[in-house]
Amino acid sequence: MIRRSLPLLRHLLLTLLLALAAVLPAAEAAEAEVAAVRLEAGEEGYRLAASFSFELSHGLEDAIARGIPVSFTTEAELTRPRWYWFDEKAIHASQTVRIAYNLWTRQYSATINSGLQQNFGTLDDALALVRRPRRWLVAEKGVLTGGATYNVAVRLRLDLNELPKPFLITGLNNSDWRLSSDWKRFTFKADDK
Image 1 (cartoon, rainbow, N blue to C red):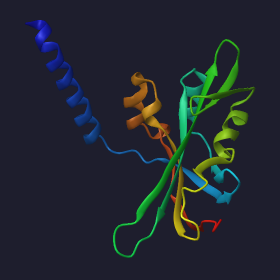
Image 2 (cartoon, rainbow, N blue to C red):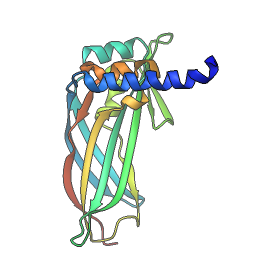
Image 3 (cartoon, helix red, strand yellow):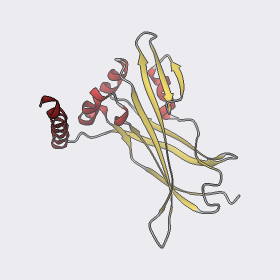
Image 4 (cartoon, rainbow, N blue to C red):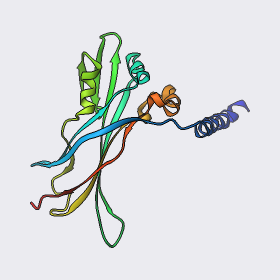
């Protein structure tokens, strides 16, 4: 009898937590800005070059210093306007940089898209990968229609979904754990080649 009621109890507890999160006042996100952004055409395709400016809150710095990994996601969307229907969503690309502090080695590590990992001596050095991400391929050659004009939108946000589960509720309700930029929008004309 008790075993059958455990899934129901878990479901009720989750529903209660979600309802509580919805009732609590929403915290404002810390400001991040898209300082510069552009698309560059190359032999492989189209690469995004961007830079962001932001400062981490004291709570977020403290969490990283205590060994809690934090992920920042840069998103890029390319849409092609159409007069006869909704805009064509051509590309949605994202790059996530996960920053963690190793208490044993006293080094910060930055992992890009769960792959390449680099170690740094300071948090600012690790955050440089977030503030100025390497030019990453958002669209391969031939994916975009040559000569067409695309609307491009880029933003940076702290990815709360990547937090360890015990800190997810804290991240959702604490303004120190919020960081995002507005979408930076511009137009781009694809190569005719």
